[in-house]
Length: 240
Ligand SMILES: [Zn+2]
Image (cartoon, rainbow, N blue to C red; front, side, top):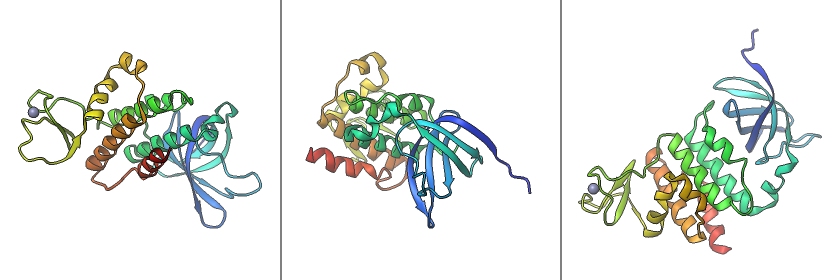
């Protein structure tokens, strides 16, 4: 019986989720530098060798099955990235980024910019880089929303309604998600690379922007709380 898969060896990748499946197997979600989002079947995932480490970049060998469940062969994580799981500030934000990625990209696809960004997290930049990574995901998936209102203006109180922004004079009936002042002040930075490099966000600004990104993704995907880790993140952020 022909098996339509090809062996890929040692490809840079990150496994971001591992779901136990039957007795000892698991299904993993990963993003790789050449094949984008992949799902992997791992036989004996919790055997002697132990489960592959999530969130840490490394090199992945697998039999690729396009559009389906690929077969896991091996994964060796890169020890230079231990801070990705040892530092909870980084780990929770990476989780959040991968949750957005998982919702926005189908199997086989990804954003090259996102791939580069997830290799650059440090304890100093994790707040700024995670917001930027989510911005790139929204942009590369075709869902970036910060364009001026259909009237060409960006005045008064702004509302996010489904896929775009409505300014105060156009919003006759207030529908959608009110963009608060904190988030509105941060949004223009995303499209301005130089300004963004110099930007530092407060926990308050981070939360406001994340809330907005979460409301936006729910509206475009027509889902409720699509990014599950967002809620956990807000609870954690408040208790810090
Ligand atoms: Zn308008």
